[in-house]
Structure formats: structure tokens, C-alpha cells
Length: 110
Image (cartoon, rainbow, N blue to C red; front, side, top):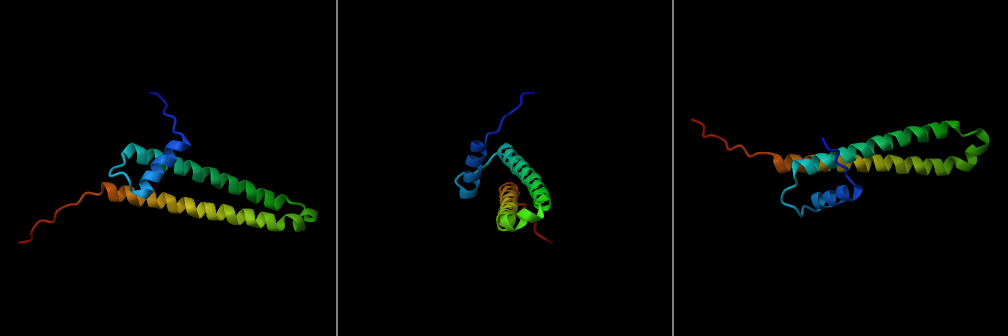
């Protein structure tokens, strides 16, 4: 089996198409690739947040006054990025569900 490399440009292009709804259909494979890349990004961000917390706890008392505001703003940005990624993930999932949901005609009741 051949490995398929997904570039960030490909993911961006697919996301742009999904979010702009310019394409009538997005292949299941494109959805899967995009969702996988979003999950990779989420995992990377979670690791970054863990490292951020380690840094926050390891700052010596003499440097806390100098670094407190910057560390606080970094924490805010990381938190906001996490929320935006969640929104993106939910948006892609909902769009996929909407695209591939099948309309089941109701049978007449007797």
C-alpha cells in the first residue's frame, strides 16, 4: 500500500471549498483527510498546551513578574485556538452529515 502525503495546502483548499460551499459534493476521502488533519492539529495543540503548563509552573519567582502577562496572553491564545479548532471540527462533521444524509421518504400510514 502506498502512503499518501497530505499537504496543508490541500487541506486548506478543501476546507475553503467546504466552508464556502462552492462544491456541490466533497468526496468522503477528502472529508476523511481533512478530519484527520484537524485531529492531528488538535493533538499537536494539546501537546503544546501541556508544555505551556509545564513552563508556567517552572518559572522561578524572580521571573514571574516579568513573564506573568505574556504567559497569560499566550494561554488565552492557546485556549482560543483550541475553541476555534473545535468549531471547525464540528462544522466539518455537520457539513459531512448534511451532505451524506439520505432523505428517507415516509410511507403513507394506513
